[in-house]
Amino acid sequence: MKKGVTVILLLFSSILFGQVNEQKHFKNIRQLTYGGDNAEAYFSFDGKNLSCQITNKKWNISCDQIFDIDIAKASEDSTYRPTMISTGKGRTTCSYFMPDNKHILYASTHLNADTCPAPPPHIPGKYLWAIYPEFDIFVADKKGQIVQQLTNKPGYDAEATVSPDGKKIVFTSTRSGDLELWTMDIDGKNQKQITFGLGYDGGAFFSPDSKQLVFRASRPKTP
Image (cartoon, rainbow, N blue to C red; front, side, top):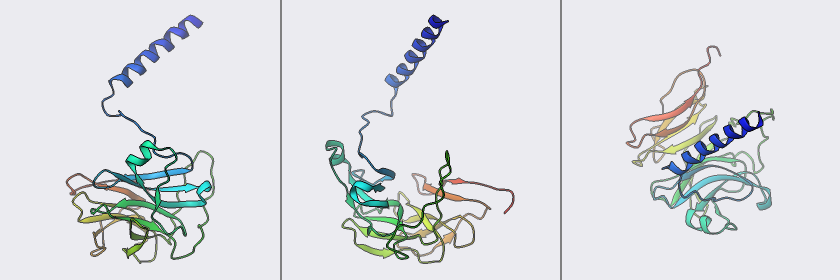
């Protein structure tokens, strides 16, 4: 029996490593962050930087703040510390580079309070994301100076991404009473609801031609 198990394991290992050696897409993998919680990382339009949200108690970042990662520097130096773009106040999420590669949009609760809002209750084995109604969407330059507030309606406004052609932004909002997708022009004008089904609609990204969207959704049968 033990010999049989050994043979199976060797066969599985051979298949697994054969697949790795033939892998065409996951090559030249490099680690960019070390320590803390690092998430929601998205490329700049020129592919040289990443925007992401980081919680790192060693940096005195107690809840998610937005950072700009220089990919080349992060690849070469494990001690590299990226530039914080958000204010350091409240909680932030869902950052995305603007087409000029010089500005980053993100959602933040900092207008409501300097402190971190209470986290959602912990349920073992479950990932929970709090839909804070204090989230609004802002644009900042790479020095962290906010240059524009794109949303100011009551309710959750977050999860924004920019179309490849640089003309539109899609985001998730509760302003109509449910978690729906909305679009707006790159300057925040012409905000328009585009989904209407009961349940969550979010995490949207534009297709490469900027004409379609892919997104997450739930469709409960009752309120």
